Image (cartoon, rainbow, N blue to C red; front, side, top):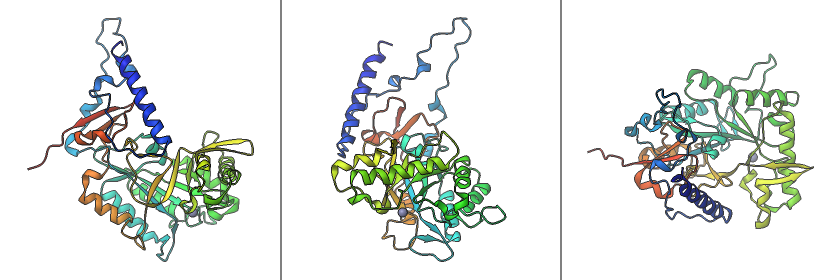
Length: 371
Ligand SMILES: [Zn+2]
C-alpha cells in the first residue's frame, strides 16, 4: 500500500493539471509523462485484497491483458467518428439520406468493422466494443417525423430511421442498437399524441435522446438567460416527457453549431439553471467535419465534439465515405478496440498523447511490422 500512495498522489496531480488545461481551452499535445509506466500503479481494489484466510487457493483474478490479441493492432488512441444525420426521405438531398443509402451506410460500416456505441460511452471512455473493431457514434438532429413514425396500425414505419436501424440490428445482432436523437421544439418527431410513447420506446430500446434546444435558435448572440432558457427548458420538457425517472437529458447538439460569441457565456452550454431546475451537459456536439479524438487523448474535449457528415452530397471531402477511405489508408489513425473496457491499449509510440488515468490501466506494446 505504501508503494501505491505516491503513485496515487501523482495521478491526482496529473489529473488536476489535465483538468486545468481543459478549463483554459488550450490544446496541448506535448507529451505528458504517464505516471503508470508499468501496470503496477493502476489502483484496482481487487489487487489490494488480503490473502484468503482459509489458506485455500487465493482467488486469482486473471489478468485481463491476457485476453488482448495484439495481432489485431488495438489502438485506443485512435480517432472515432460521430456521424451526423438529419432526415431519411425518398429523394437524396444535402440533408436527406434515402432509406437505401442509409442501409448502404450501415452495411459499409458493418463490413468495415465499425460498431455503434452510445454517445455517453464515448465521452465517458467506457468502450467495450469487441476487440479488433472500431466504435462509431450515430446521431440524428431535428427530430423530424422521418426519424421516427408510427403508422395508424401502431407499427413503426419500416423506412423511418428508427425502423431501419431496428431492422438492421435484427439482421446483424452484433451491430448494437445505439443512436442518439437530438430533439428541438415541443413536438419531437411531429406526432403530437405519441411524444412520450416514442421517447419511452427509444430509451427502453437503449437508444438515446439529446437536447437540440427549445426553438432551434443559434446560441451565438443570446444572453445568459436566453441560452439557459433554450437549453434548460428543453431538457426539462424532454425529461418530463420520458416516464423513466432515471433518464437524464445531458447531451447537447448545437443548432447550426453556434456557440456564444461572448466568452463569459460559454459556460452555460455545459451547466445552467432555468425555472429553478439545473441542467448539465456531459457532451456538446458541433456540426462539422472530422472524426473526434479518442476519449483518452489529451486533446479530447467533451464540450466540443466534432461530427462527420453522413452524406455524399456537398460534403467537401469531409463526409462519411471520405473518412472511411481515410481510415482504410491510415489504419494507425483509427480507434481499434482491445475488447477490455478497463484497459487502454495503445502502440508504444502513441503513449505521449494519452491522459493519465486513475481508473484504467494503460497497456502499451510495440506493433510488429509485417515484412
Ligand atoms: Zn438542427
